Amino acid sequence: MATTPNRNTAGTPQPGARTSSQQGFVYLPLIAGWLVPGAGHFLLRKWYRGGLLMVSIVGMFALGIAMQGKLYSSAKDILDLLGLAGDLGNGLLYFVSRALGLGADSVQVTVADWGSRFIVVAGMLNVIAAVDAHNLRTGRKAL
Amino acid sequence: MISPSHFTAVVLFGLCASVVFGITMRETPRRMFRYGLYCFALFCGSAVVLSWVMFLIAR
Image (cartoon, rainbow over the protein chains, first blue to last red):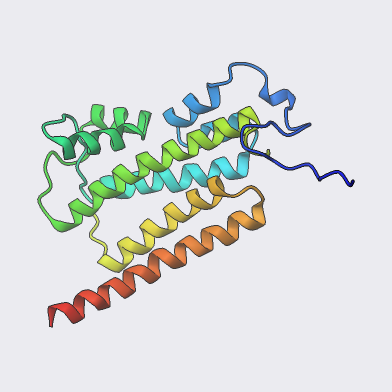
């Protein structure tokens, strides 16, 4: 009976996927990727992917701020709580923007509403990118 | 403050989201590019279709 070819099953590291760049704290790419968009991929020497992720996520966040989007600061109801969770996904971008007083306190025009969505979605995309970096680090996804 | 049109906002949104989806959901560069392009087409296409549906409903 013929043997089956090597398949990348979920949770199984691929042989030879682990390189010298993967030594150290296993959650470092996840945390770095959350704090700074694309940094998790940079740590794994995925310069091109990390650069594209950084440009996309930071660009989306900056567009949201430029549209006078709202930065959620408190959770008065469930929608605010969801917005705050999405905003927190931006990592340092969110905290620095809050510290600098960027973004609107309340949505006044239609464009600002789109801006708020841009900021929230940028945060969620950043979380996806950080988890992807973690999967690359653990070998769950091929390097 | 910038005030893009609704369609420009959709294109910018779709572009950024498609890049992230492409990179994170596929493994090889060729498949990443194709999936990103597919997502971008779906974002823009669905916006156009839904806009026409709303236009027809509003008449």
